[in-house]
View 1 (cartoon, rainbow, N blue to C red):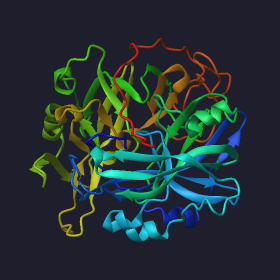
View 2 (cartoon, rainbow, N blue to C red):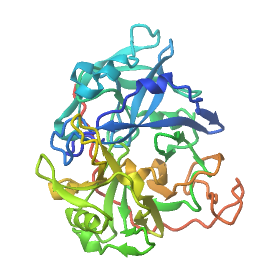
View 3 (cartoon, helix red, strand yellow):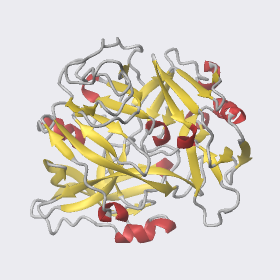
Length: 447
């Protein structure tokens, strides 16, 4: 969920079960990297605010557990690539109605019980989701840990009030001109990891994904990581289409999805806090027309949606970036109905595409977590690059990311002919696109 944009205000998932879960912890650390488990659960939207989707639809949201303070207080935070600040302690009375019980039962951080907490002489006022979701309070610092790595005196907010949130946020985006480094930057600056880079492997709720600060897992992608120039978490989409259940394919003409005719492809922002992809309305129309069994309806706020059977057929949506194509199964694009008056007999879902931000006067377009689940992504902030490939899973093999140019290891993945090892490598592709310049939306800190 990026700050200050009129997109789906996706509510946070129920978090209590994560802390009570009997699943084994999968956090780890090594020479130059820190791995943290990322959990998924189904979550509905909060209120529509100025959003293209209404509150009935539910996708997935992702969170991590962090430990704060001298007394090791464990707090679940939503993992959000669309913002960069960290804050805790939402106001449960102003959380979405359906989530208030979970909010009240979730652990909260108390600066008064930690001997290492410090209140800072500053306040914050962060706005998300087109202004409908707000958090305000005071800045603090305290020791913050993930796995075995501890950042001393990490800067974060303790909310005095919030609207629309069930839990706090761990923003992993890139600050543009902020007076304090975020958690990701601090890990590198304090030499807890080798590089200001991390890999992200999002999974569906029956699996545990991971975020690896300073490293990659070579057993979580298919073959080769493609290097793509990036501006923050924005990169260029160069092709888009579908592969149908019978194996036939269609590739959509650029004028449908790149309607402003960007010469190097369509700038798209990768947002782990969005459960829908936001593209041009022109391509949304043809996507639904081509998808088996889809029917178009106009939702409660007057915008078109495609309704499809929840039991998805075989088939994929195909997203291309340079020479790499990421195929997302139809089943990962299903967004379920969470409304109290759901018709139990229809078994209908939303096809996970929403009216494009540029159609609403917003830039850039968005690829949300239903796309990101099908991709293995490496964000190298030091070199302004994103490396990506189609996701896979054939074991565990974590290798640290180095420093300097082309620091991401070039190691074949699950389905390459070469053996995956620290020494095997493939030729590094030259960047296929020039650097981008669209502005990534940010929150506003006041005080």
